[in-house]
Amino acid sequence: MEQEQQCLNVRDDEVDWQGPRALPGGAATVSGGTRDTEGDVIGQTQWQAIREAKAEGKTVSAISREMGLDRKTVRSALHSEHWRPYSRAQRSSKLDEHMAWLNERAPQVNFSARILHQELRLQRGFEGSYEVIKVAVRPLRAQAASAALTQRRFETEPGEQAQVDWGQVKVHFGEQVVRVHIFVMTLGYSRRGYAEGFLHERLDNLLAAHEHAFAHFGGRCENLLFDRMRTVVHHDREGSRLNTTFEAFAQHWGFRIRLCQPYRAKTKGKVESGVKYVKRNFVPGRSFRDLDDFNDQLRTWQAEVADVRIHGTTHQRPIDRFQEEAAHLAPTASQPSFRDAMVRERVVAEDWLVSIEGNRYSVPFKLIGKAVQVVREGAHWVIRHGGQEVARHEVLAGKAQLCVLPEHGPRAQRSEQVPALAPPAPKADSPAHPALAQEVEVRDLSVYEQLAAALEAV
Image (tube, rainbow, N blue to C red; front, side, top):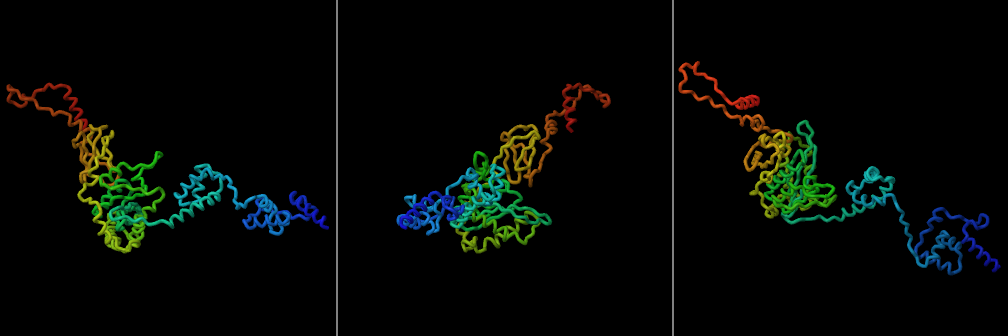
């Protein structure tokens, strides 16, 4: 009997090593597909129990039945000298070559897997499914959300920093719906703000808004923080660089330009809160005649509401905290406007016009192709050539306007060059009768050519 049992054990062990097909009849239970391919995941305690059971003389099949494990898992544990936790093998993916792009692009589209999938297919030839992108974006979105929760508010000293941004609202000017671009500058310490509406976010409006804000506060901060707006920073294939005109503007007023990190606009959260406050508190329920009326109402609202409210972060009125900050602002009242002081170089076009801030103004016809210098003096553009004033125009409102003075035209220029024809001197022996006094004067033919040219120009 003992010998028979021993034979059974040997046979059972042999059958175990040969696999389920070696078992006679229907005595074998074939493991499921998952177990055959991957096996069971076991902990260190279970791994130790398998090795102890084998040391007691139990077969692989017996251990497998007792512990409810696949025989391959039992063998794997017996063949391993040390326990190793299970780890899934990394498999290559069609997305691997695009991961660097995905990590950079995902925050820009608010982690939208749908947009990322569309761009990958259209721009980068990706052939994978939308589900692959959705799974890849999930941890990136979670990481960004976690970082947002751990952000700490950055506070500045009085006069140290102001933040600048634009907002947009749709309002009614009478019966017409108009998009107004609202410039907002917020002082970092007091949270006092300045807001002004414009029809565009062009550079000339940006410069004007800054100077109006400086006048409103009575000075300017040491640093101004900007998002990477195109009127401040140029972006091209070679990288990013400051707009040369705006850089000169900063040098003129003496402030330092500070830029938010790419796609981290929340670093200027103070001014973004200010933009939202204007849009949500000032605009609703109001009607306006035009842009001037919009800005008149906005100035009143700032003085009567925005400046005297209790701020949610500082728990003080901005106008009260501004009393402390005002002493730390660099004074600007005695400094001339950059827009007036800036000398603009222009080359006269073939239509004897020069372009200044979106409008065109005439200069004398003879200056075509020559370089002229343009300076603003109050409400006029003064145009000089060789140090001499050659034209003076009133500044035109709006854009695409034209101002042409008749004396600058080619006909006027040619008529100035035609010499005046002097009357003939009377002769001493002229007869007393007027009819006999008329004589035909002999003139050079070139005089008649000049006269014909002058008549043609009239």
